[in-house]
Length: 486
Ligand SMILES: Cc1cc2nc3c(=O)[nH]c(=O)nc-3n(C[C@H](O)[C@H](O)[C@H](O)COP(=O)(O)OP(=O)(O)OC[C@H]3O[C@@H](n4cnc5c(N)ncnc54)[C@H](O)[C@@H]3O)c2cc1C
Ligand code: SF4
Image: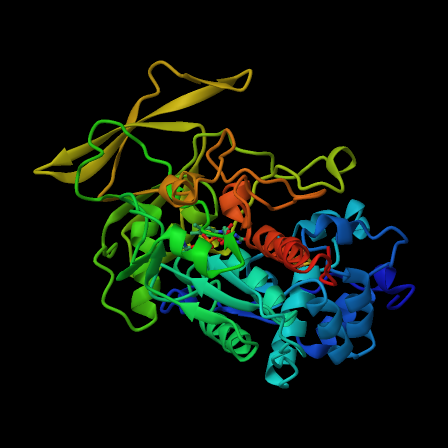
């Protein structure tokens, strides 16, 4: 372990943030990783507490006490090896993971938890700068071929694992560049897209082929991003490859079919965020401009928060975020919930940049003038026995020129699953289990599923976990056994 008395001596170290007025002027990342000295102090606070609950709280089961110790001792190279042994993309999770590991940290029961995510961030960035992250091509090729449909974190993690044990992997992506929601959903100010290019270069050197602007299966519904100029039939993949992994995410956005939905100014969140990411990457200007507008974001999660941050960078006149559910408590009841992920009020860096937040609100109507959105009619809710009841007389109207629907995603695009004839679960996800024989296998022979397409809308770290575990299942299917981690 790090320093036996470290947790008694040292306070949690925080990463540096650029001031709000500065960071709102651009779309660049604004969180500065810990200095080496601060990282050492952070690592020293780990108690190596016997049963590392953090390791279980982390979906990829990072060996957290081990890399904490390595950082404390200044063994950065060892730290990145420990981190990479469980996580293909710590440069992503070190920036955008909500860090359920920290909710499970034993020190967090009665003090501030170890800043695990900040150590992950520091380790991978230092490793990148020092050239310690190099391609790991397989020593021997197996002659087996695998198609991965979708290049989000699940597809990429799966592809990297499979390539490293010698399979020929081709990743198909319908959008113009790889990365899934990492590339086109999550804004640059949270995740610099050059990190995806950097990882992709490593993967290409390991033998992974990327085929972009190519859709597998049939049509995409409205509201789902699609830059494809080519279509590949599911039957062709089934003929050409020894195994197929579906990692297409959960892309169907939840709609709000109330009066006025057709008005100009009402958009799904990704209709705003995707063009912004493309513009920042050198593409054409975002056709939705929030400058000087009254923006209301409907939905209180990550996607909504990203719309808040992007609207503020545009220079919106006002930014408001409404949530249907009641306001969660400011702090959790630790003894009741530890080591699990607690329900509590979460305030993102985007919220801190300026935003009015309100809870228990239902939007009843989009009000327009000459076809353009001008206001929202809303009502306050009283939640009784888990059910919302409208409060009589609580109706109100707010000015609104742009409304972003950020209420989550209901299910994967059905036509992709149907093209392969894959059975769905009750929520419309690809049906496949995650343990036991046949895990990650769908109802169709040699077709596997991982990430949001299987588990529904989730987190990057869960997608990486599923991609890794699915790779093992595919390797076992192809070779009879596998040395990839479970
Ligand atoms: C705006 C936003 C912000 C988020 N912020 C965070 C965050 O801060 N932290 C966090 O942990 N999680 C966040 N999430 C959730 C996270 O991004 C997802 O859970 C994760 O990306 C899922 O990974 P995936 O690989 O399963 O799918 P995706 O990332 O959705 O990737 C699927 C890919 O498959 C492609 N595809 C689909 N169908 C086809 C087809 N038929 N042919 C070819 N290609 C196809 C898609 O174009 C897409 O590129 C956010 C989500 C959104 C929408
Ligand atoms: S991936 Fe997420 S949960 Fe796991 S150690 Fe990193 S920040 Fe914590």
